[in-house]
Length: 406
Image 1 (cartoon, helix red, strand yellow):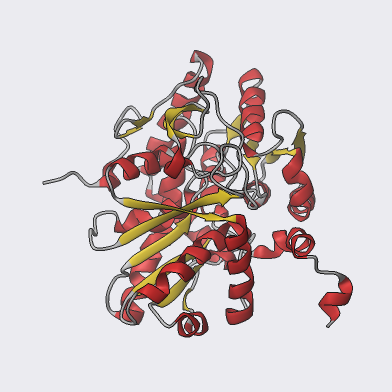
Image 2: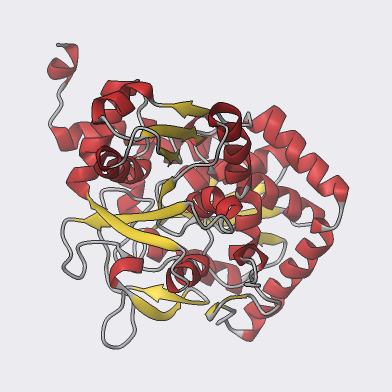
């Protein structure tokens, strides 16, 4: 009998041949401390009791599974359901794992949470969780993302977080990760490194997966209640992979459920113009893990581009590298214009303004639904809300105050 994909990683932090800890010895000691603390916490019912209490009474879970009737009828194909992670407190799925990270940090006696962010949703969620449990917070963010996600920068500051603007490299998510890791290694005293996705060295991909898997657990119960069966397709955007594995994990052993990981196709398929790591990358090392990577001939990460700040990352979580090799996921990409179009379609048909990251998943659902029968079910993860993107999208679409008034 084939071993369940849910059982990974192994004791050394590998999902198949991907993952591990490719880090300096001083960082490995700190990671092992986190891994041991998490194993103890994971076995403590009181830890999970507090976690689930806060998810329900603070974050607002369970998030709804909504039948998008208008969109489904417009497309004249499969029934489309939307998992409404955008309705969580702070506006995305990120609150699921940041509450867990904050509780673990507090349990370990840490005084400060530190992390990177791209779109700013993880930064906002971590700053929120830090305020909730009484910890300091420091968020590192690329200069390009600070500009295009300014509203989230303000939110982090209002929540008491220090926002560090990263001005090196391409000044995007990869560079924020580089910067926060370097800062942490130099002075780790009292700090818990809160990873924003299922990326990085062990145990971070496992920890984030464990806190995010509630998404799919809820979907199974909700779709059985509404349709009396499980979905045919699950669709989620993938940058690092936290929202996607949150949706997929519960269904990994249900072979009949097709899982579609939608990456950022950017401007085009030329190197430097996209972030389609699973589709166009190859195995390599980045940020302490062995995983699929967009890389040059020397193995160095390539520049990436996406309309979505949360997806412009040259790597991907090792979980997804293994799922790709196992043939368990279907890897697709959506370009900037397609995502922008889906953003508008969902807003106008369902009155839901999704994050531009989530719009990549919506765009792919719009592509496949008309090709499927009306008895088939597609669940799309709306990983975040689009408030953060409004000004950027308005500029992109050329919307003026006069246009908005008409």
